[in-house]
Image (cartoon, helix red, strand yellow):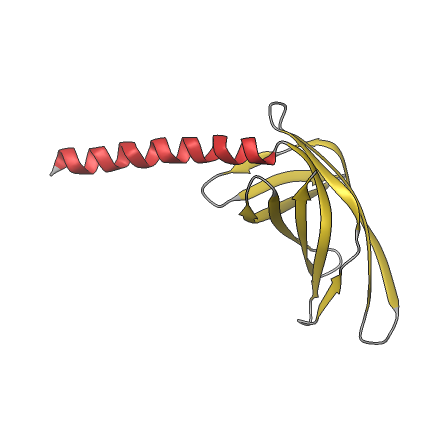
Length: 141
């Protein structure tokens, strides 16, 4: 019985290590932002189907860069324009929770990878300052 438990613990630890390598390999490269979903603090959801921007991941250096401009119309009919910008910041990937941690200026960003394949990715984070959940739908260039 002890042997079986040790075997599964060892197998689990090997799978965890390989998951981090698999995700790092998939992250590598330039990603175009195809679609965005913004959910405000009151639960209203807005969309931008034509955002402009890219994310770039350099896995061997663990560096992220991003520059995205997007806009949406709120319930009052006003057009809201915003940006998301990261300039070559170091990131840390946590394979247990599928999270990427990095900084924008002095703010710590805790982004969750919802889905990642070789050609597509969904990434979301909660913007504490603006009270909104922002989701990026990305495709690899």
